[in-house]
Length: 384
Image 1 (cartoon, rainbow, N blue to C red):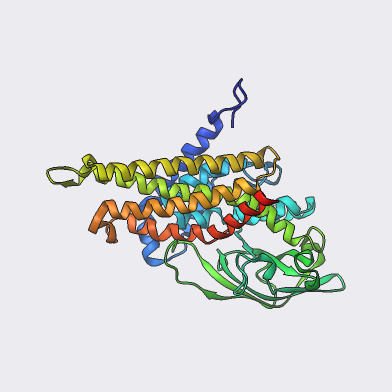
Image 2: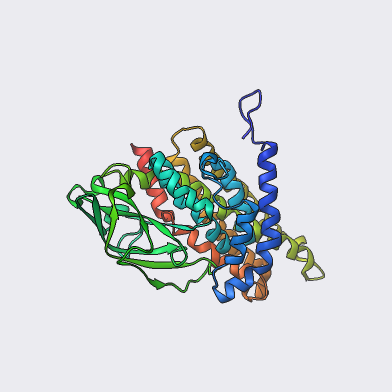
């Protein structure tokens, strides 16, 4: 973001506006027209991913020295919002490489970055595997273990709700190397899908974001070399927390994108649909709903940008990231519900786009830490 002479600016620079326009045009031309198809069929959007790769909209957060786009987190938010406007399910499929790259960027050695980030840039997909059947928001509650034997680790456990798992070539997996130490005994590993004992054991049929693949993986004594460990033994929990600080602003921005789409659709409909002799947008009840939707979206966008900007400046952002994630998710959920209400009976029908937006956005209140967990983080930071 640019800096004015007074030290504060909300303006984007020319490069950021160009990136935003690129993502916006792609969302409108390549995503929105096929969103209904992928929602209905739950197919993985490989053709769209290929086009996004060609357009330079995948791996944007990977540093340029490793072949990526070198985008700042603010720029990642700009792209994420636009892609989510087109379809947050397809957008999730496109952006998971960004998430999977973060632990490698923040904790990997130069050799690890060269090896794994370059594979992503070359065309491979990767997944981020923390969540387990019995451990979601409670990251320290995972049961997966990694037992060291010589120069290798043997991983055993199960990870669930893993995005792109059926199509990823490798995974960043969190496991306990010393469970007696609780969170201080957690470590992070890169696991390739072709290793013996690795299996995608279940694919989920979801309420929303049906264009994204969400699956369960099983690690049955999967052997990985020590060089696949990120950081030191015991660094895993802190790596995961650093990932959250970077991923939550981007998730918030994507929620804003869905909310903005719902508002745009509602404004168009309010101008066209007539009731009692006039367009429904002339009725104060609808006007107030639209005004509240717009206010919430604008506030959520600024919170996401601020949380991202702090990361780009090398400043702490744990509480602002929680602000952004919770507020954007809750706001987008409310906005999409209001959009269905504005559309009335038509809003409940699949013929119109707003029912899909409402289904898609619900998961923003759940993944990357629930809205309740974000409030716990905020309160903990207040009382620290």
